[in-house]
Image (cartoon, rainbow, N blue to C red; front, side):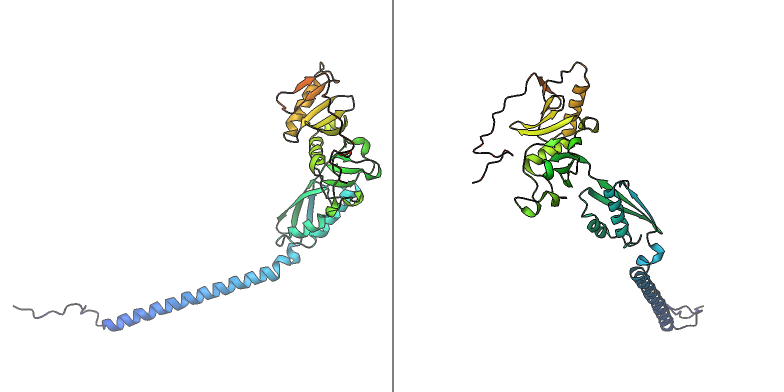
Length: 300
């Protein structure tokens, strides 16, 4: 027996129109899409509100103001150290742990040539640490009322202020010029730096180990480089300012040798092979008519 024709492509049990089902699925997708867009818009609005609250309120709020400040590297037992300490505290008073302004600190510390660098670290909610790198005394440039205190890196720290007897002297070279002037006021050159031969000598003297610095008398510039004279008459040639640490280690090793003759002349230009001789070389004196006291040509 024939069972009669069958209908293809349609479930006879559903009893529903396929077109209607498709429309219902499309509406559901539209509702899900609307909810997603609404959720995304709400999330974006919340992010913008939080960002605005952070930018215009929280980052400068008293909730995150710096209340616990630690300053590392500054000796507050000196007047200069106390001034640096106060300048740091003044600058940090304008910041919070969420709004650090290094440029404000740099501006406050720019008037202290003693300060080489300063770094800020913060910790929520209200703690900060400022680590200061301080330039150390290295040498003296000039004499009398014009004497300047020079840092180990050649920076002028200001007038020597009575420290001439405790630090080695840079005998020759050009004085630092503030604002490019040819005849600077020594009292106004703090923060400037030596140049040329004077800077080379400052770098050599600046690398002197602390335990030897009090025995070093002065330095001069020779055709072979920087020559350092000790108080006991010992003369050492360092050449240029490169490898200063190695040269001074070689010098310290020689000085520590009980058999070393301190009246000798030592060439440390090559620190691995120091050359010791009885007498220093005899350099010709500069022509007074063509060179000044610093060794630079004199202009008419």
